Length: 92
Image 1: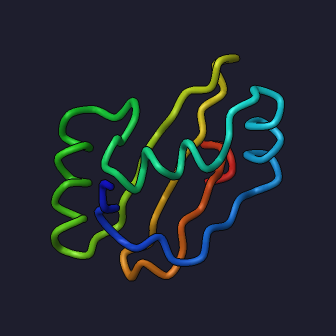
Image 2: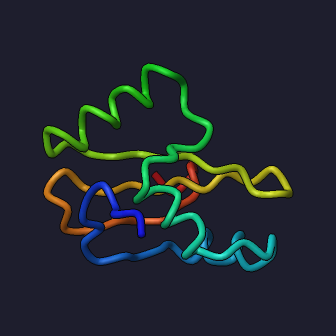
């Protein structure tokens, strides 16, 4: 079984992100697994490289996943690995 790259801490979500995932029939666990295993989603190459560095150097990790209706969900793990948050870009 594959091991996650980093600790997620407490997993939380904004109400808007929950609603968007429900409306799109996308499970939070699926997105969380992608994030934890290093699939950063639709990030630019330099942002993906920054995430790879953040995994090694305890930095903030940021992923972006488009949903079927075009809504984007961001998943952010804090530098200290205390929390991972699902949110919409407009909630940032």
